[in-house]
Image (tube, rainbow, N blue to C red):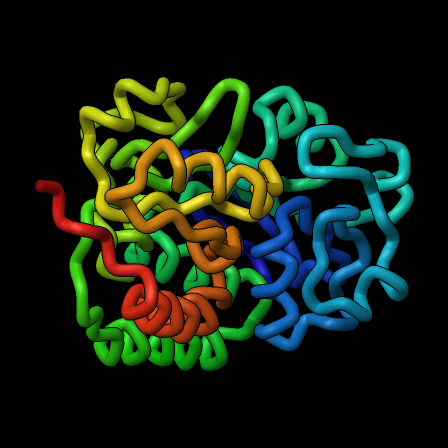
Amino acid sequence: MSGLRLTDQIGQSIALNEHPKQIVSLVPSITYLLYKLGLDEEVSGITRFCKLPAHWKKQKSIVGGTKQVKYDRIAQLNPGIILTNKEENTKEMVDKLLQIAPVYVSDVKNLDDNAQFITDLGKIFQKEDMAKKLIQDIRQAEMRLNPTKRLKAAYFIWKKPWMTIGGDTFISKMMQLAGFDNVFAGKKRYPVVDMKQLEDANPALILLSSEPYPFKEIEQKELQMQFPNACVLLVEGEPFTWFGAYPLEAFAYFQSLQNQLNLCIPKKKS
């Protein structure tokens, strides 16, 4: 490869003189995508939150978290490119990382953005055929997904304060594919809401995510008591938040959630 130029998903121009032989990934879902693209040897640095594939935690250099990294450790790896995300990583981090190596900033809000991101990585790492196949598999899995129920739903990512998700997020788009219509779709990003707002929104389904706040059964029971006419479920965060290759697993998970709803159908209000 010689003289590849492309624009990342925040409009930043990237110039690469050669195929990157060392990759640092600062986002768990991107790390998993790199694995699915067969880039085992090229990936040298990941974060402590990059849990898939599990064996990479022992094989790769851990360069910190998603919000705080060890810049000296990244520099020692001599990366050809650093892969980041607009929401997961801060602008301050990206500015500092640009002094070490070219940085690609992803910004995935829907599956079209996701396809573009996969396509870009296919070009960068000379994995075009694998990238095209992955995009095709995701599209076909999306077409097979046929939710048996459509429910008004609220999705929570944090407690104290209670934080939900707006309609401009990847989570909201994945909720919609799963058959869940976000009652806070009119808001942006990650708004704070109170219980009165939740009551007024009148969701039939309340989803409590496993990340970033690790909701447990105690919160599930508390909300179920407050909202007896709703179905309150603990859900895995990854199917709703991880872009890249993970939507393939997500669609199967969404089908299992639909099956759970048969055991947790909201009662009709009198």
